[in-house]
Structures are given as structure tokens and as C-alpha cells.
Amino acid sequence: MAAFSSLTDRLSNAFKHLKSKGKLSEADIDGTIREIRRALLDADVSLDVVRSFTARVRERALGAEVSEALNPAQQVVKIVNDELTDILGQGVDRPLNFAKNPPTIIMLAGLQGAGKTTLAGKLGYWLKDSGHTPLLVAADLQRPNAVTQLEVVGERAGVPVYAPEKGVQSAGGDAVSAPGETTGDPVKVARDSIEYARQKLYDTVIIDTAGRLGVDETLMQQARDIRDAVQPNEILFVIDAMIGQDAVRTAQAFDEGVDFTGVVLSKLDGDARGGAALSVASVTGKPILFASNGEGLKDFEVFHPDRMASRILDMGDILTLIEQAQREFDEEQTREAAAKMAEGSFGLDDFLAQLQQVRKLGSMKSLLGMIPGMAQHRKELEQFDEREIDRTEAIIRSMTPEERRDPKIIDGSRRARIAYGSGVTVSAVNALLQRFEQAAKMMKRMSNKAGMGGFPGMGGPGGGKKGKKGKKGKKGGSKSGNPMKREAEEKALRARLSGKPNSGGSAFAKKQGTPQLPEGLQDAFGGELPPNLGGGLSGLLG
Image: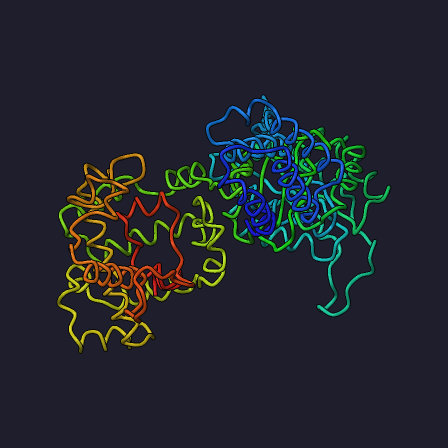
């Protein structure tokens, strides 16, 4: 997540010098702790949280836990991961508290601008997708156009909105009402919404309350009045991940004021330093229940402290990736695609269907960010243009069904027609067809290995002799006995995998600017990068 990118980089650098050491001295550990402390303080983590965190890490790192480990560096990373999980709320994560007798009442509280209204729509969409019948309640009658905004968000989410009062509205768009002005009674709106939900058989009520630019008694009193009137099952404190050091003071004020039961982190896709997430749960003792990381309705997920700690340490979040895939993918369609890959009949129409399924999972940037070790490719990720997926889809949709089934029949005149119909150049069509052909060959090769046995932990990569030797097979295989010829072969292989022409120089010279996948993913692709990944992520689809 973008909010933790700087912290991830700093922590990764803190562990680098440990990897080459078989035994760690006290000076090594103190140096690492010092780097971790700086990284956390730079990320705006609360000073008290940083002190307790580094003290626990140092105590464990100096103990027998590390000194007796076969790989001390990895053991230190594990300790940091464990302690990071603890301060994010290990053991206190839980599902929402649903009422035994509906409706379940969820009240949102927080400062103005924290993202409460947007979150109300996301939470409503998530509950609806989980089989509930939610109702959004517009109890923010103070912020100009807050009721209108909630109605728009509710319409997008397909969730009804209870809004008997229109609240403060801007007059003609230019004249905005004075700050602090309010119309109607938010407490009455909240109380009446419960009876309305019972009559209409809504099983969940989400109440969007007013915020302020800062903590004040008026804000707290209004929130307390609404709480006392509806007796909510959950009071969710919505906090902006970009708030920085002020997060602790704000969280403590709301905890004392309304005694919230859970935390929701919003705007985790921002470029802030993310220290709020590492401070709030530890200081208040209240669990972080959800994380919001974008503007889309689906940019919302249940918060798992252990998975978030793994992401921060660049260890990936494969479990969340798998859960999203299981939820969104059509299993029957996926099985049919796998069968077509194995028999070599996978066409562009099948590719389009798979591409549309992948798009349901969210942005490609967020998906790739869940893969372990991808932090070192952040520059590539940031440069990736999501619109390339749209261009790829446009090219395929400009083809006839016959052309999609058998791309080999697409000659020069057909390519010109497809390019004109999709609004791209002929070279873009050529590039897509070339990448598809390479990808189809690779997928067929992987599918033939005992049901995708080429993935890490499920069989060796590569094919033939290379597959039997596994990792060492990459350096072995059918190489020439002539040293100069062998060097030329290796040089040509590197140029082909990187998607760049053979530009001369030693075959063993370090290639600058050519990204490499993490080791486990290289194994998954049989020692080869996916088509054109060596030339940049933006080349994958267009």
C-alpha cells in the first residue's frame, strides 16, 4: 500500500547488512534497531509506540532465539514481523458485532475529511455483497452537501439512503453556507431511522455522523447524543492514514468521547507515511476492523494485522490475493481455460474472459503489490498505466470471433482494420499478438507439468533436463563446451528474456535497469520472465 511504501523501503534497507552474516553481534543488532527506530519515526509512528516496539525487538534479538538460529538474519526479520503484528492488533482482530435481533446499528465517527461518507457507501456495498440488507442514514446535517454526497454514494453502491432532512446545501454552487451552520436534528434522524429500518426489514443501519476540522466538545456531545439515542452495536472510528503524529491524540479524544469499538483506516492509497495505522491500535487497544485504500467501492477490505505486517516488510499478502480470486473468479470458466491451455487451443476470446475476471480483483498495481518482493519494483509499478488494459480489451474486441479463436489468420490487412477499429497503431496490434503467442506457449508448458506443478513448492520449473535439475538446471542444461560459444549463448538468452536486442559486451556483465522477478516467481515461470516484463510492467498488456 502506498501509505507504507517509504516504511517498507527503510525497513528492507535495515535488514540488508544482516544477510551476509552467519552470527550476529550485539553491535549488529543495535545498528539494525537504530535503523528501525529511524524508519518508524520517519513514518510518523507515535514515539511511545516506537520505544516499546524497539525495546521488545532488541530484547528478543539478543536472546537465545537469534543466537541459536541457523539463519540469524531471517530470525530477526521474523521477530520484527511478530512485534509489528502485535502493535497492529494481534489477537484483537474480530468480525463485526451483529445484533441478535435486527437491525444491527453501526455508527461512524471521526474528523471532517477522514472519509466517513465514502466509507459508509463502501461498508454498505460490502455488507450487501455479504448477503445483508443495509440502510445508510444521513445524520450529517452540518457539512454542506453531505446528505447529497451520501445519496450519490448510496446510489453507486446500490444501497438505499434514509435522508428525511437535506441538511446544509450550497446556494447555486458558489455561495456556501457558513461553517458551523446546521439544519434539522441529527439525533432525531438517527432515532427515526431505526424504526424505519424495522418497518422496511433492513438488517443493518449505517449512520453517517458529522465531523469537525478538529476535536471539540460540540462534536463529541453530538456524537454522544446520537450514540445514546440509538445504542449502536458498533461505533467505528474512521481515521485518515495521512494524519501523522496527531493520530494518537485524535484517537484518544474520540475514545474518551464516544468509546468507539473499532477503527477503520482510510486513504491507505495516499502517499502519506502511514504512522497512524501503527499507533492507533496500540495506544487505544481497540481493533482495526477495516482498511480503505482507494475511491472505488471495492477498494475496501477486512484488516488482518498479520497480513498487513507482511506487506510492510515486503513479504507479500498471498492469502488476501487468493481470497479475492476465490471470491471473484468463475471456477467453471477457469477450469475450461486451464484445459484449453493444456491442449493449446487457448484463444484471444478466452484471454479476454480471463482479463475481465482479473479486473474484478481491483487494480493491477494493488494486485502486483501483494506479491512478495515487489517493493524493489515500485518504480515499475508506479509507471504502469492501468489504461493499457482498456487498450488491450479494445484491440481484442475489434477482432472477429474467428480471429480471436485463431490469431494466426490475422494478416497485414486484418491488422490494419483492427488497429483502425480500436484506435491504436498497427504496431500495438502486432505487439499484442506477439506477446499473446509467447504467453500461450509459456502457459501450455506450465499446464503440462502435472496440473500447474511448475509453481513454487509444486514441482520444478522449466522443461526437460532443466525441469529435473530445478534451480541448478538454469545454469546447466544443453550448453556448449566451447567457453566463447557458451558465453554468446548466455548473452543471447539474457537479451531475449529482457526483451532487448543483444547490444554487445560480456554476457556476465550486470544488466542495469532490467527488473528481475523475486526468486520464487522466477521458478514459477520456468526460469523465464512473463512476456515483456523485462521491458517494464506497462508492456504486459499494451
